[in-house]
Each structure stands twice: as C-alpha cells, then as structure tokens.
Amino acid sequence: MSMMNVAHLIEYYLMLALSVIILVLAVWALVDCLRHGAQRFAQEGKRTKGFWTGLTAASAVVSLLGILSGGGIGFLQLIGACIACVYLADVKPAVSGQGGGWYNY
Image (cartoon, rainbow, N blue to C red; front, side):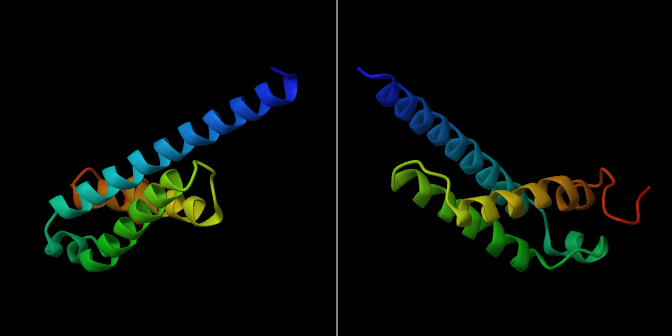
C-alpha cells in the first residue's frame, strides 16, 4: 500500500469521525429541544420552540445524510454543526434554567 493510499484512508476515517461527532451534537440538540416546553423559550426571550426544533431537526438530517453519502464534511454539515452548537451553548442553558443568554451575566 502506497503512502498516498494511507493518507487517503486516514483522511476518510478522520472525516467520518468528525461527521459522526456532528451527528451526535445535532441529535443531542434536537432531543434537548423536544424536552422543554414552548413557554420556556418565550420566558427566556429566545426564538420559538418550533423554530429551534425545525433547525435542529434539519441539522440532524443533513448530518445523517452526510454520513450516508460517504463521510465527507460538506458545507451544509458545517452549518448544521453551527446550529447545534448555538443551541447547546446559548438556548439550552437558558431554557433549562441554568442561566445563559445574552442578558444573564
């Protein structure tokens, strides 16, 4: 096996691992979003539960399709990862009562 084949194999498995990590983050964000009531989103001044459920569900679907298509990280998967990370870093702490949000210092 040549060095080029080894490099391609390493790249493939690295991208596949990153795609799986993005999928796990997206599913975690979706499940957490579904756990909280719609009134919590309004109380904390966040967008609606339907908005975040739709975005996190779309990011999970795009992440899954990215894995099924061969494991490469595409532009849409990166957008989905950003959506999931924004939800987990900002919205999740606010709606779960742990603080968070732009006005909680």
